[in-house]
Amino acid sequence: MAKATKAENALAAIIQKMLEEKGVQSDIAEGLAKGGVGLGAGGVRIQRAAERQTKKETKRALNGWQKFVKAKKNQYKYKSGAKKGQVNFKAMSKAFKKTKKGSKK
Image 1 (cartoon, rainbow, N blue to C red):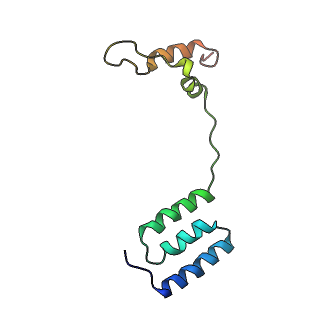
Image 2 (cartoon, rainbow, N blue to C red; image 1 turned 180 degrees about the horizontal axis):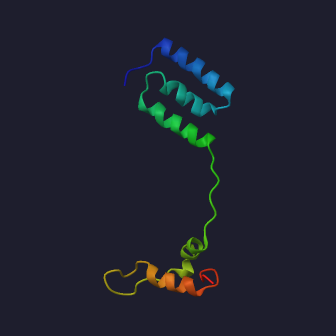
Image 3 (tube, one colour; image 1 turned 60 degrees about the horizontal axis):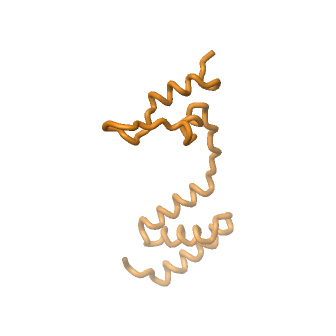
């Protein structure tokens, strides 16, 4: 990787200052500024991180089946055979359908 010249450093400083004025965090602004000036793919990773930071999506609520599967006490496991230790979803499904939230009535 080649060293940045004085002109590239000056341009990076200007870009960083502009980004900070727009409300981007200083460390992300620094990475974007340097990434845009001859540092290649490293700047792209930082730019994606900045996009993820600005765009916060709310998580969707889990449905009844997802809550049932998530609970450790409901995880039926195979006791023997080739699938020993794995979760038995067929048995879990039957148990879930017997619960109040799992019944379709």
